[in-house]
Length: 271
Image (tube, rainbow, N blue to C red; front, top):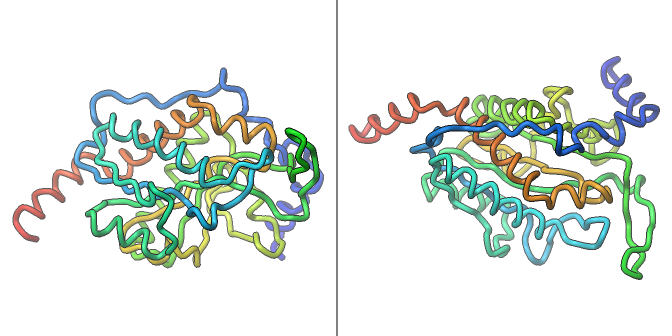
């Protein structure tokens, strides 16, 4: 184990602030990246609703499946991106697309320029505890909270994907949110290399939905829904809207208008 990884593991064990992520939870301190005009005009963005009906993903502390969170947040993000001028393609809006590899294929067929998979997070089973909500005993874990961003070096457009992941992480951090770093913990099922510890950006080489994509692709975990407070926070329209605005900022930086116009001219002349 490297010194850096050992230090991270130690922090996960001994630091309550590092583990619970209390920073970034006060809406009064959020700073929504505003935009004017339509900075994403001409950009086609595929938003993938993570998971599907038969396998709806992680279960929240109150017994709500992740798919419900993914769909609700995707709707808000789509509205923000459209306001910024983007054409949004929602993949898996009906929750019926079971194949991970098919999702970026759908995006490519719709001529999307970029693919963003929207998810909500959980934790390793060893952290789960029991509580009773609504008369039902359920799992919860208040150890970790926060967003995280993933990219794959096996993606066909790995360089742009990595740049976008780093820009999204930076935009979310600059908005006042804070990431969870528990995916870097050196245990089975985690152990993901961090590309940026401050902004919570990870390398996840074999994540199918990313490595199979022919276009730039990232996966965004919007929050940890097994955390009882975070489960409620990620449902706030203000929180979802903040994420949407952060994505606008990052997309505008990675796909600036000048490049999009040049791309359009190249298509026009068949190049």
